[in-house]
Length: 223
Image (cartoon, rainbow, N blue to C red; front, side, top):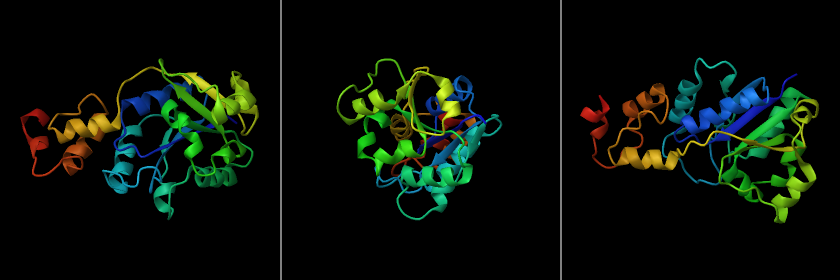
């Protein structure tokens, strides 16, 4: 069976940077699917700007119609902090010995040691690093050790082994960040072309990233 990709995050909001990376990995690694898992209670964030319901709707809208893309509300239904290790444990129970591939960006990987029970992640899944040009993989400390002991360049191992490998894959560099999108919207600028129109429509309708009394989203720039 082809590996299952698991792509978690706050997706506050989801944008083309997320989608393009997931699509390239879906194809390059022959994943059976990529499951987008919006975080319900992100332990590293403390809060989100859009509600869990809105973030789920945005992800659902973004992946609609794309074969192999699925949105999963697992972490939104679960109480307490949305720890990745708990999500992977549930997926492992559901999928037995199937290969699970946790997709993370380079920035997330560099902060991996701050995650709850981070050193157990490879017991449940492979780690797939979506590597963008200009970023350097850690070669010292705990992360350097992790790569030295578990790193692989062999995609076939991601198919034949259920977990335990770290694989680095270069993806197209799209300098889009959710933080910058929220800043632009708060300043009254249109996020068009940074995300699917279906996601933009939800943002416009809800006004979830506006500040104060601003009503620019309904002005001429957003027609």
